[in-house]
Length: 299
Length: 311
Image (cartoon, rainbow over all chains, first blue to last red; front, side, top):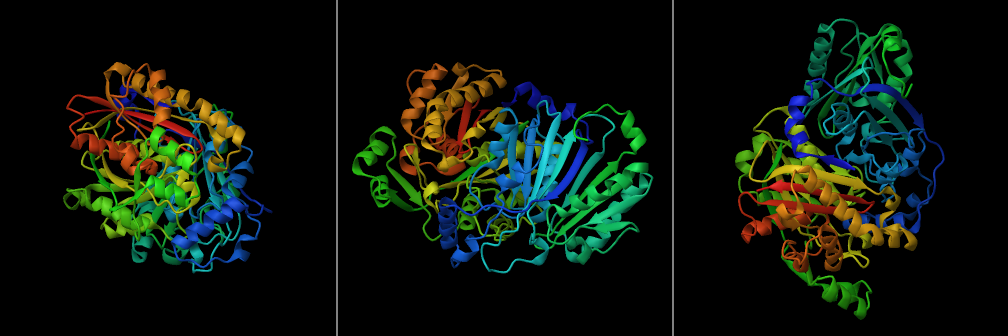
């Protein structure tokens, strides 16, 4: 059970450091193939929803096989691990009206606190990561799981901007732990950022990170590349078609190389529709430093 | 600490009798009588012709100080019951953010705890504001939704849904309604919600009162209080009979400390019930300065939550 007490509530702010409390212990990303068909309940649910929004019902769009959020969550190897907190984030809604995060809580032994962040475009994963990494929620959270999902099913033919259209079913898994020596994570989000402001704001973030010493690498989303351009020499970009998980796919792919000497990495996303600029700074610990730290979960 | 600075409820003008409503949904006369006589439902409000964004905007407009406080609102959070509420990328929450001139605020939806998401939103908003460290900052939370599909219209042998909504302002620090504790437990074996097989439905019904009483007790303990210190329980609106079992498990005799005044006239309004009840209790003078009260919510999935606040 998740419980806050009067004493914990009042002392929460004083007890918590200004820096992040949980650190990144593991990142993985995978694309999920196959899927399963819609059942009658889901089909009826979407028919009612489409009717409320005056969308035409096109039965053939609901004859495809898709991966639900439940399928995507279940596809990871972390579903039975002992986490105290798990947060899911997505830009698209699910294609099945159930509660996969409640199911995850059960799989984790019934004591995990789980919920989801959505309806924030591609900024949602950053919000979820902030909530988990900054230990904003009180209690003895030593291990938290952030699940970021992309789901490709197109359920209507109305236009969706390419930058926020998933073309694969994919899940990124971020494991956070309180053990020292792991990769520090810091999330910044800015609202109402115009396209013209993106490049300068990212450059400022790069300067701030560089001021702490060491090389700064960037991983940028399609939205950032379109409006911000490479603000650092060492920029990589997320693959198209994975608006939420793509950044973390690129991060996971490059992590072994960054790990050799340690690196500061900025993951940058600009949601051009909702105008959120999200930046996640990860201080990747060098392998030698990491080896000497005390941790044993997730790697 | 976190406090609720203001609540503004919106009860749509159109009233529909439970009898007519359930009859249209094919519920037979005998069962309708159960909903009326034993569960306590009489009518619901329906926001005919209004979309979700319209309901949220009207709720916010009823916050008297919103124009003056607009610049202080840092977060706009929709606490949503329905797993899917709009066709992608339609985004009622951000329509509301723009409509209220709150583009400077970070807006997102909290979900997967269904009707318990409202109390979760208070908890998360309070923590974010506290962490940000600006004592003037506020969060605006929206609760209540559209009953657009069968699973959002009638919860079989539990509740009839309604479309009343509320806008809630949350502030960091102590205030008129300070959060003292929050307890929440998820029973994920019920994650299929309305699609649960009968056997699981029966298990859920059997364990419901114990699970709800458990989180209420945990929240009361967390607040450093006893159940005798609680002046009022502001419940979510499920059938009145279930509350008899919960009160018995809490050791409370009678229903004088359970606020059921809205249940008959609003139905179960997703995550909005305890907030609408707080507003009505205030209007009726049922809570005084120094009183402690409990808000409760149970969300499909199933999440049981309780929050203790001090007036």
